[in-house]
Length: 120
Length: 120
Image 1 (spheres, chains in turn cyan, blue):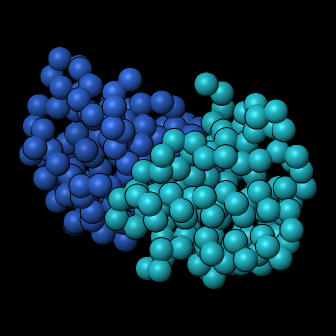
Image 2 (image 1 turned 180 degrees about the horizontal axis):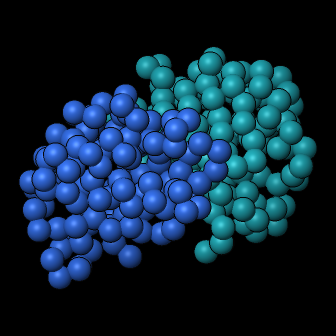
């Protein structure tokens, strides 16, 4: 499970990185070159679009951070993991669930994201 | 959301159908011809494998039924939905979460399933 946890941490680090160059490097670490991402609000395909998409999300919440939710749950080449968006005081303002299919090299190839409708 | 709910009901009906011919018909209604399925215990690709895979699952729990969990949550061409496996008395013996990508015709093209580790 260590590899999966590391992958999720890298993914969240990309979402928390405001510097574009560093964000792109984290995207390259977390996602395969041709990776796709789709959640209710955003979509992207490939390293450049992913880097720009995450930059757009960051610009909306410049002082917020994404933090890991429950321990990732993986089987075969798929993983699901939860996350929270927290404000500068650490209060949760959004919670989501992502499901990723992994490429043979262990990076994410396809991510489908869902938003929880209520906080618990 | 009605179409999604109907799709999930058809999917669960396939998992509850012990007659192979009727099960195959439900599989054809719920899944695209080249659909794939992957959960921690089982995998299949295409109508014939899906029909056989579900038959194998049914044989393990002949008197149990799959019932829908929370209302399905859909966006774009993806949907997530929960289910419970209940025994003849209606007690839950397992709970899962499935995430499906849909084909243009609305049938499932790819299903990734996860099992919950604790009952709530």
